[in-house]
Amino acid sequence: MLHVRQERYQLVTLFVFFICFSVLDIFSSMFFFIVLEPVMDITNPNFVLLC
Image (cartoon, rainbow, N blue to C red; front, side):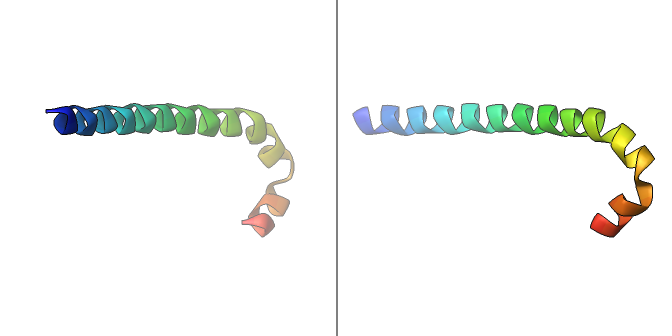
């Protein structure tokens, strides 16, 4: 019984971690686009070179 509970706890922890990671990823990409969009517009050839 204790083993099953521990397994379930691990699953929930993993799930929460995954959700947090996804939200963080979305926010970071949004931040990335908001911050770098003007810079990309200004230095478009440099950005292409970087890619």
